Image (cartoon, rainbow, N blue to C red):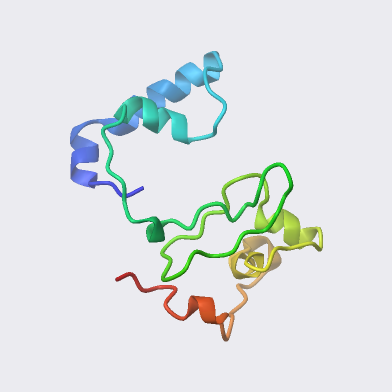
Length: 129
């Protein structure tokens, strides 16, 4: 999600989203985490961005728990959407290949681990055309 913060503040969107969250707290009206309040507030008034901004689906298939690979080209955000979270799979000893990238950010493991090299798929990881 990319937002114009000036318009965000001018439109009081935080309060609007919090109102839907309060309704959800009192009477469950949706199932899908944090996205529905945004969808309710913006009601389709959104624009798509290039898929390379968000590599979603790294949480795998919710039914089979399968691992997914990166789409071709540069990626700006890795998103472990779904039930397969990297910290669970790493702690359980059955990680997907990309879960090890997340491992360096695990604050519960002490000091951050510094990776010296990334797989070739990450040659342009932090670049966006």
